[in-house]
Image (cartoon, rainbow, N blue to C red; front, side):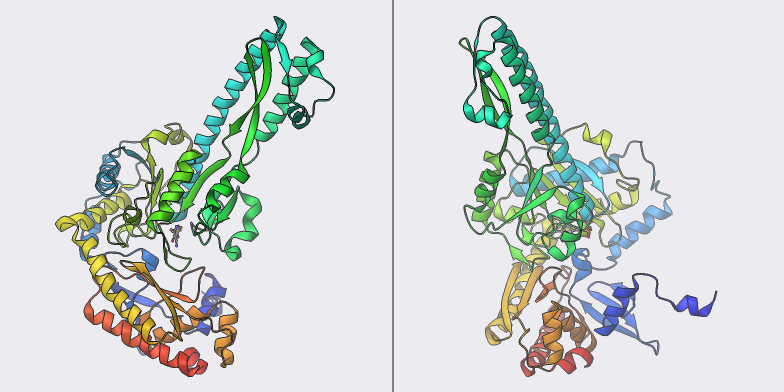
Length: 531
Ligand code: PMP
């Protein structure tokens, strides 16, 4: 091959260049536990303590030996990876395992059906797609009822019933004159208008709701529910709208639901009178949320907010999609982070660590009472539910559940230990560290804004919203720590290591962060960028 062409960077070349400007362009060649190794030009391997943890996808560590051994045994045994349209008892086993955990953590015996996917964004899109099928089927039932009532109204007027339509209804229907005086012709004009207006209203796109800061993926559908405008706004024309709600304000959600309410017209024949009435149109597709917001800077929802959301959605019959893609799989100290706040989803999505750090797997759980079997006929993916990733997911769940849930206890105790260190730094260096948040092994350390820094380098990076990445480069080069900011709140560094985090690793993390804070106090941009 032409050597010049060979050197050209073609795989997302812009990103590679940008990483190199911050000293983040290392190539990792090996990994195990909480360590990634990169190779220097002279061939030596440098170990890096990975606190990003595959962005939450390696709760049991990189290349967990038991998962690797199991993966090898599957391949050695010739597992039929791609055998679509056949029986998949292993998928049923995984669904049962997870249902058992739902029952234990939420006290909810209602079974959840499982739909398989390949990624977090896809698992969320499956939930939203299912919710839309449910909405459309409910809407069809509603319209069937309206059609039957129209026949009854026509018959009633034919046998002498009086037509009574309010001035507001006439205006909304665009009906002129007074159809009540026109007998048979009048009811026909009203029925035609009801049909036309209902078809228009029923055909309008649904709207979805999500808390401000939400992150649910970057595919065409899921990016609509991802608040960050940089990711979302170029693509808003491609799918249904999401309205972002400041759920910290108690009345915000019910206000949003009320403002989005739309109705259909219906007719009611009763006691010799035919009236036009309004019926609520199911317009809100779902409310999506992460029990611990990851990319918004690690923000934990509290029980009171969860209760308000649950009550408002139950009253308006809006399904709740609980996105546990990042917070689930044990990281919070329980399998489901939502279980800490008693938030029961109609849909629950999992991905990331579900694949044990090796496979790519996503899962959408749908509460039995909402489940539409028709969905299985209209949704599938070539790779979803394949034996390799599904069996690895089941193995990962087994490892989390082993020894009476030892992994959850580790997540909690190791997380508390790391949290104490971060809290200590906040207390000691309140001028640099703005906040510390999180639960278990999903922690965030927020730095004060540096866009007014005396250092041009720091000022520029902070102004571009890239402060966290500048800090990441320094931590990697100088302290061999891999720590990245959250995607939509880049002043917050995220900590999502595996449950095997040791005291020594926590001490190294603290030493590196102390070094970083000292450099920031000095406003030494040069060291942050090139040190
Ligand atoms: N939901 C949440 C809460 C996430 O944190 C992410 C990824 N950061 C996703 C969905 C998207 O997952 P994926 O990258 O696997 O598509």
